[in-house]
Structures are given as structure tokens and as C-alpha cells.
Image (tube, rainbow over the protein chains, first blue to last red):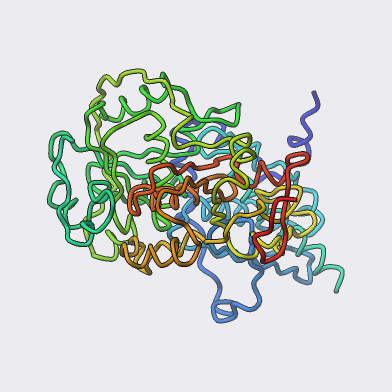
Length: 150
Length: 298
């Protein structure tokens, strides 16, 4: 069966995926926790503008997401999630790190089922993984909207 | 009960005061033989960021659910899960969690399916423990495995299936504990963004809307008996002796309400309909009401 996810997944995301798959189940949760601790703080220009952010309603905790597409067509993703939601922060951090430096086209080509490719279904549960799918979906939606308005 | 009940005055007015412990009581009893403290959260990683010393983690999603069929684990698996965490049949289990004890209540409800006698909630849960500056640790808990008997799961006493709800309709009260927007059917999905949803919005006809948070005080503790009676008896029209079925979307918020009705207000026949709206809202030919009114059976 053709592995669609494999061929279309950008290098950074593929590496993250492979790092998870190389671990035992219990260690995968630890890695997710590490990602969660690495979620970058918002840059100064966004810290006082909560109005610019889109609320990701599918996540049960308050998660906000914002995309910039710069003049070189490179996407910059900003996500906030509270400290009390480490799993969501972990998901957000994977996406922020994995999408860093990608162009709008490359982001739009990321397979929608990438969250399910991480090998976290057993440790985290399919229901929670939908939150990550929602983050990715909304990021792509914003990318489309922002380049259309350029 | 292996460990004494918490004699706190706040609890004495409740129907079953032995089902709650205060943070003060727990701090004093930590480490006592016969007591196991369990953390059960919405977020599967929260325990790892810091937990009550000596506590073990039970995750509702990954530990208590069947991986394939939409159902809970069986007696054999339950015995394995709890036994491996040092919980014996006579152990006093205290469960706490984030989000006003939503998932802690759901875990307690699952323990109830297996007839574990002494299981209690920490009033105020994780948030209150933290707000009071009490000790948290990231140290792993070395739980000593014990034997737990294999008990057949009891699905008839506190659990309702779709068929039970259909025969209950018109014969007893239903409580819908979701937000009002979900109850009326106003809250719809944004196209292209799948949620934990259903094909049709609305509520089960005749169900009263009592969002679950009406049972909780701002510090995540349960409201007093008098306040709870105002919400559920005066407000929702429940009368002592009623057989009640509570539901939400997947049964987690309604288990919080089940706990309130059963253990705090003393209703003796309360069931949690765990299929809840994710089942009812997508089921063929079941009655649905929309809008603010409870509705009637056609």
C-alpha cells in the first residue's frame, strides 16, 4: 500500500515522526512532554494582541493560533496553549518546529493525517489526536487565506 | 472502609459524606497504608508535570477504555490496571484531577461499575491542591503490584444504554449537562473541521438543561448541599425518589453530575448515559428536540 504520508511529509516533520516511532510507547509520552516544554513564547508584537489570534475550538483548552506569510512566501506559525495543557502544547510545539522555514505551498501539502503517523494513538488516544489535526487544519486554512489576500 | 472518612463539616450535609475528602485531610493521610491516591486528568501529560506525592496515574482514555470497541475494559483488564498500581479490593482510593474533577469523576464512575467499595473524590481536585501551595512532585511513584479480583462489570445499576433512555423517556427525568448552546442545537460545526460531534444538533426531548458547572464552586469544589438542591430540585425540577438519567457528549461531564446526584444529594437510582450525544445525535430515528424548551415526546 502506498504510503502517501511518507512521500509528501517535509523533512523536519518526517524527522520528528521518526524520532517518535523509534521509541517504546511510554517513552513517546516523555518526548511529547519535552516538545511541550519547548513551545516558544509569543514574540513581543503578539503578546498584547489576543484579538489577532484564532481560537481553536476543537481543543478543549483555550488554544490560539496565528499564521504569518512573509514576502518570501515563508510561513511563520504562532500558537499559545496554557501550561495546564501539556499535551496540547506538545502538539503545538511539534507543528511550530516542524513547519519552521516552509513555504506556503509546502505547508499546504503536509498530509492531513500527519498526527496519526506519530505513533501516539495508543499512548495519547485517538480523540486527543484530533486536537492536533485541528491545529494543522486551521494553520493551513489561515495560510490559504493569507496568501489569497496578498 | 480501610481509612477513616473525612469528618469535615462541609461534607456532613451531603447524603454520602464518606465519598469526599478535603485537601487538608489528604495532606494529613498521605502515605497511610490502605490508601492509594489516583490522578485522572483530561490531559494525559499533566501528571508528569507534577503530581501529589505517592499518587499513581490512571488515564480514562488509555487505561479504562477498550481499544477497539466503544466500551469500557472488562473485569480482567480492570484487575490488571488497578492491581498493577497497588490498588487492592479493600483499598481506599482517592481520585483527583484537573478541570473541576471531570475525569476524576468519570474514573470514579468506572470504579463503581466494578463495585469497588471505597472510592472517593478530592474536593477541589488538582487545582485546589496547587492553589493552596501544597506539595507536588515529578518523582515516579514505585507502586507495588497487588492482586485484585476479577469482577464482572455491572452495566445495570449506574449505566444507561440508548435502549434504556428510550424506555425512560416520558417516565422519568433526564438531565442534559452540556452547555446551553449545545442543548439548543445552536452550536454547529465549522465546515471542514470535524469535532467530537454528531450528525444532528439538539437535545433529548424532555431533558432539562443543567450545565455541569452549576454543581461546582469557583475553586473547583462542589457547592454546598443547599446550593445543589437549589440547582437540581428547585431549578431542574427533580424530586426526591426520582430515577434520573444524565448525559453530555461522551459521558464525562455527566459522570460529574451523576456523582453529585448520587453521593451528594442522595438520589438512589441515577444512571450515566455514556453513549450521550455522540451516539444519540447520530442515531437513526431517535427523537430530537431543538431550541430552548425541553420539548415533549411526539
